[in-house]
Length: 388
Image (cartoon, one colour):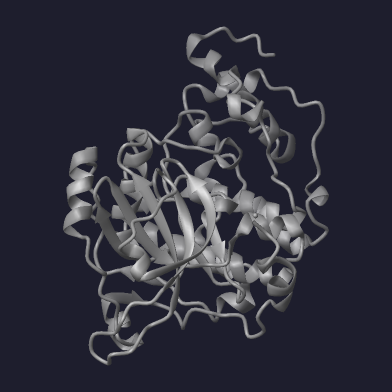
């Protein structure tokens, strides 16, 4: 069964609780009691164990295995989830990750994030995106549920199953509400797509609900135009002028409905521009007055070489993971870590005062009609079943 765990693994891992079901498997919170072979003591470590059943939906499996391979390639960054080990048992694959208390969507729902917390989380996401973008990788499916947050506002970026190396050929996605106009309108996609999604997440942290909740691709574009306005002229894609012609928003929403903080809204507007080339860059986000004080304490890292991630079949990914089914060697100190990375700023910032309210309030409680008739455009009006 998908929720059973191999008995031999239970000799090392003590299962605390099931965190959630995922496509083709389940994730548990557990204690790792591995014995240190050098010093002969028991290391106690909280971990997350993700089990994927090879007999499950092949597409779900391929996405999960692809994400694991990508994480093994890119996880030499403190704000990207580490794969500690991959264990293969029969038809099952167990992936061991660092355990992080909760995801960002859970924090947004309980409305306890203060401006300082939002600033720190935003800066940490920017540093993670800067790292992957510098290596030529675009996340493409950023949502609050793909950002794990601990009690010190440190984040771990996850959800790389649909990520792609530049140039982007055929972007896939799961959540409509965080997609940029260039994906919705089938235009060219680059790293600025992640900045749009980050802007949606930033706005959601400010107002505690998603900014754009459409029930179809066309309706999603309508929601976007209601807030940021309709561009006078755009070369985003061949479809864009025809689709935008059919959009007549009833009213223009005010950015003040999101927040009364004028500095925060200025940054948000710069992130949510219809044209990708006009969007603020990651480096300029860190220079913005809203986060500048905290950003000065952040560290930007680049990978020592562009990422190499080949598209593979299920069997090829399976073989890759079996070959890599060893514990990833972890650097013994910060110096060895820094030798692997080009560093351009100071040490990664942790909040000096942990969010005690996080632990007290959430850690134990949260489980977290257009006239256009072109066939190419008709699918923009189709309502996705999961948004009904």
